[in-house]
Length: 421
Image (cartoon, rainbow, N blue to C red):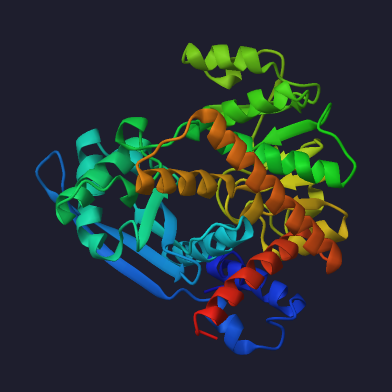
């Protein structure tokens, strides 16, 4: 592996982030055993899934599962369908997820799933057969009290419903708590779609308050497209923020004075592209991160902000809604330039919170109304944000290390009480 490839290796980046926090945290500093335990998954599973394609041939797909740490409860983690999935990426994501659960203080451990596939190239029938085939390969390692998967990149409520159904057939009992992120008809939770945007906004608003700042009038770039992007832009616009960027599969537009989200919504409803929006300039998506704005929200994949472009970031605040969008080297550059990075293990923990809420509802067979889900989410995210900010201030460090320290305290205390340390 070349130096550049190693630099962009997700697993190595995750370990660097953990090591930086360990060096600050008195409960881990100079304890190599604790670092080894927390920086490696307990188990990594690799499976090969045969799928009968529509043309009659059988194609084999490779899947991974990394189960990182379950000291605080059953493993919990998303399933990613993507052509660039790798074992390294899945291991890194499982580590980030362990800390994510601990930061927001929910009683779960974490893992991550991934299948090497471009789902856009599969028919609906092929996608269902792949989803069910994956469950047949790994069902012995999952379940409501062992490991509960959820959606991630390119996986949907429909895929979760297929997987839950296949698991239920294999174990011989209807088991809605075996997967989360399901449709409401199959035991899903109210408000999940909106919560995926609202939870991140709760974190952002709290951080702005701690820095004696306000969302009103802030110019915002959100990396991403589709319904999640549209939901978040609408919510931010309602708070008087100004959205200056929009993108989809056909291109991207930028207007530093702001984009009319209502017009963008109308374009999407009429199946047109954002590039048909007239009052903005067309720009390349690779230019996105370096445009003028107050708040940058990377919401795509890993390694978007690196040592190569970190010095050109103009936003004061960076809200990481993607997993691992900022490399450790870029973190240092941003901190030295006075940028405030709201780390992924806090900023996008809302979705694991809502998944946890769904799991609780499935296990009790009692389902909450939308208002109750929102109230619980808001309370937990505000509390977690305050704890991370306070820990960062106490240790004179940036928010990411503050978040890791909060999480490590909880993880190591659980391991100690269980006799693992």
